Amino acid sequence: MDLTLVVILSILVLIVAVLRGLQALRHTRDTYRGAKPGKGYHEIDATYHSGGGGGGHQTTYRIPRDPQEYAKRFIPKDKPK
Image (cartoon, rainbow, N blue to C red; front, side):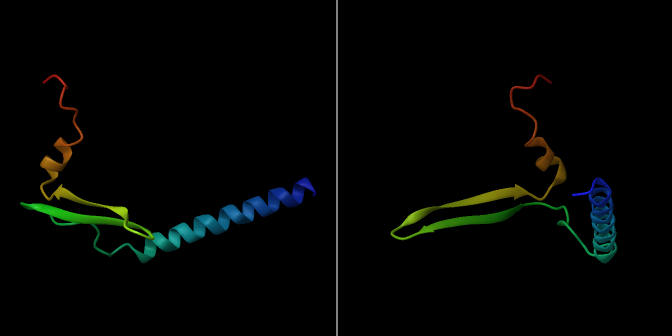
């Protein structure tokens, strides 16, 4: 394959990817994301069934609504103060 053709196709792919990214940003600009801070927890139920006879896993995650409490979970417990 000619090197010029590869360069031209690569540039076209890059241009299409950038234009698609800009379109996605413009489309989601005014949409609300995330959750409002507050007290209590969000509960996320993660259930997995492997099919067949009884295999699988179930877990419930509790995520705090308070941003400060949420951030504290990422600090190691043995970190000196």
